[in-house]
Image 1 (cartoon, rainbow, N blue to C red):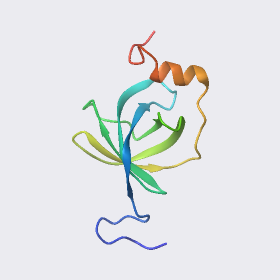
Image 2 (cartoon, rainbow, N blue to C red):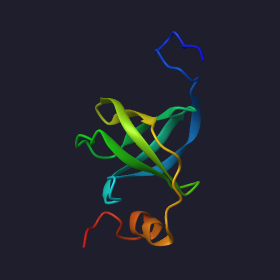
Image 3 (tube, rainbow, N blue to C red):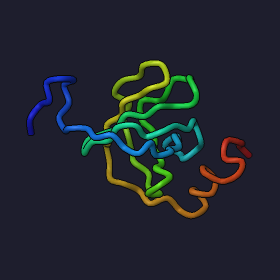
Image 4 (cartoon, rainbow, N blue to C red):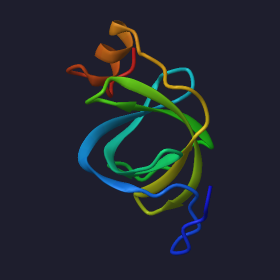
Length: 109
């Protein structure tokens, strides 16, 4: 495993086709939404809609592939954030998917 000198990363990153993501707390409550901008084997860069600080650990829901990644926040700059994958992918339940991507996903009960 080598280091890529341009930005101290372990894995090469690749651009994605700007996939929509939802950011959820570890208890799966909605926090923010954004776009998956870069992806590598070990992490991702996201661009967020909101500007509230993110928790150190959270879930990232890929709305295209319908899977959660458990992630740790590595850096934050404005509305961009870099995350590292810290666990295996999780398949959301249908109810979780609807709650986070459905019509009124940002509203809480």
